Amino acid sequence: MAPAIGQWVRYRVSWREGARSTTEYRVVDREEDTWWIELTDRRGGQTRHVRMRVRPGTGGRAHELLALSFKTNGEVRQVPSRLLPTHQAQMQTWLAVLFPDDWSGRPTEDVRVPAGLFHGAFKGEQTLEFNGQQIVAQVWHHPAVPLTGMVKFVDEGQGGHSLQLAAFGTEGARSEF
Image (cartoon, rainbow, N blue to C red; front, side, top):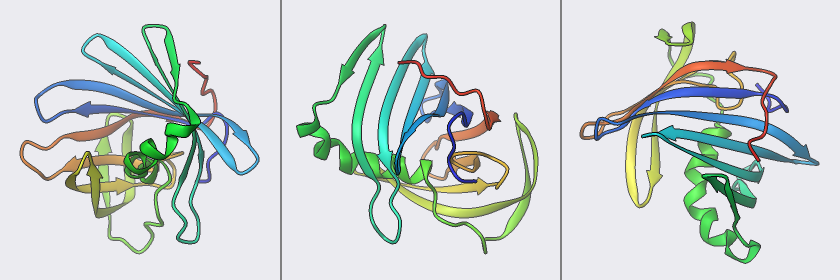
């Protein structure tokens, strides 16, 4: 499903160390060929928000991070444009999750998550890199899910962590900034 203003997805996350959180991605605005995407992470009694302006990569071109802000405890910090290249590399994996490659041709199976039963979800292995560590995960995608398309993510590493789709919508996303 192509990105559109108002789309949102919410995941229940189980972390390696046993912690749990809720993560939500929202499309809150568009400027020409770029999107304003926000992330809210609720973990351990704290809520953190991230707002980024992104130009999705196409035709082998990398995703571009054009603006980045963080909001914690009501305080907003905008990353200066001169520092964006520093964040660009570490954000590539995250942006690849937000704007996934084509998963057609992968095997399909039914998968149940808190958001419901998804018949014929595409299942495949995905290798991601976060902070210099590679994570190999099984990932299920479904075309009915906006933005990420992701229904479930299970890290196969030591103790692994997982995400399961808890809720989603094609309209109603609101900015936290």
